[in-house]
Image (cartoon, rainbow, N blue to C red; front, side, top):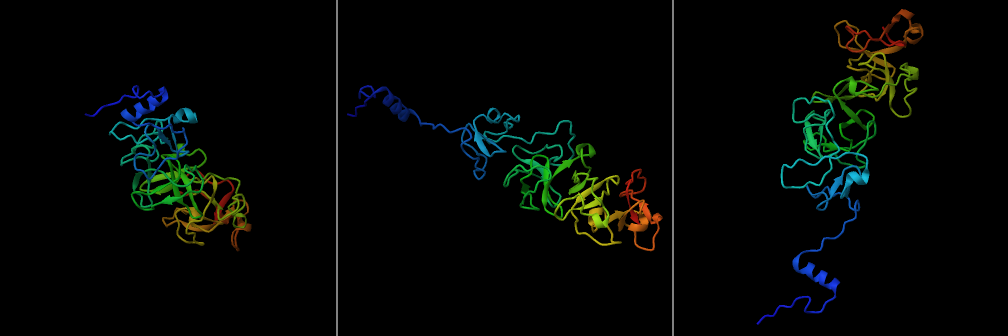
Length: 317
């Protein structure tokens, strides 16, 4: 006959009794150090051990990340399934933003499930994917990395509401926008594809758009000073993109060689790349023979109906 022995009958000490009881009735759950593990992005939905959540900026697992970091509010993942994704959402919807049509809105930061962010790929299609890459999240103007370009899984390491775009010099993060109110130091004028726009490069009114000084004020590298086509009262430091020479067709100044501006002469023709000049020194800046009257005010693109013009720079014609 089989006989059963209890721990007490064996004369075991109290601590041993606890261990034996744990072995009989359940498994020991180890104590995981708060923030001691990195999130496992290759594990599907379960990025962290049970009861822990992935803090996306540090990519570490925290039991109470809001208390540990004391810097952002977090929101729970909507209870749409029995799967606990263990992910913190930092891509909060932008207050007061009216979402457009489509699967998601990158400027309003709506339409995607946590921890994905709404973005647009290089084909102009809206996407919902988890941002990832080295040193995530990158901020506006920082260099960035695009993964799986042109596909429905395209993503990058820019932060919420930002897009990694190749702009002619290097890939950097740009901010999605609805209008100029979203861009305090620039304009909501750069096309991102699919009808989406991002804030253009910041105004840099201290730079000189004259050919001899086109790099002055823009620092080292390939960037040059251009008359802003969308905001003709300003100059910007930008990267030439497929730049063309004098009298070539263009749509904005950065498509012209440094020292040129994309000019709409209001003559019904396609804008052309024309030489930049100082309004008060046209005879010096414009090709000879010329007079000061050969330097015309720059009104941007389109020029028709524009009430803005640059106070210092114009174009030669």
